[in-house]
Image (cartoon, rainbow, N blue to C red):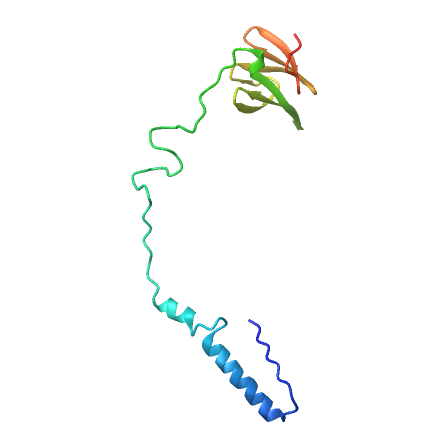
Length: 146
């Protein structure tokens, strides 16, 4: 806390020091925002506050009652159009970022997810396999090359 008091005039030193002391004492007594000893008064009245949750019957406050409503259902693509190449990443090993249905998957060579297997990664293209169908997909490619 910084207290600045400015006194103008040509008074003697003793009178100026007395005025500073008086101003400092009144400032300390009322506090910085004018409330007299507000922190000390509130500390004496402190009582523990009991928290009551709005839905005490819920075990997990972040999920709705009745199961995993927020979890997406398992999706198994049935056509090539259900699989889109979003991008590529190379952190130690090359990976492809695929959008399969409504889920985004990061897969490396040999990974299989939702019935789609990665056979080859050569950015900007990736070779994928679904059941007996093998195709080459690329970013921003709506019609895959067969």
